[in-house]
Image 1 (tube, rainbow, N blue to C red):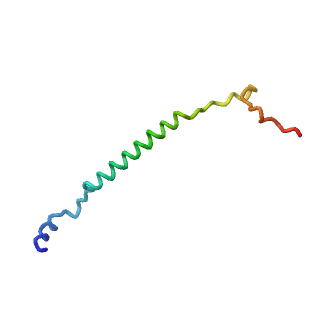
Image 2: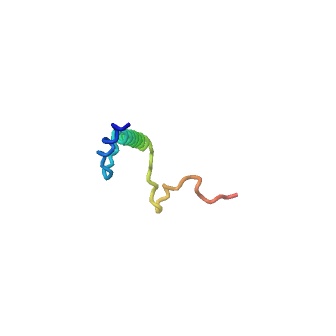
Length: 70
């Protein structure tokens, strides 16, 4: 145990590094974000979005949107 004491005094208290574990965690998170972005862009390409017609023309009104009679 006494041979570890000189190693402990060489550590600088003001210097903190993440080490290999920090790099691995960061790399895994970066890969996860990249995969999610790729999946999101694939799903967004499948979305069929159509602009509604202008309010002045009667073409944009769905058939069931009129007042109810009855």
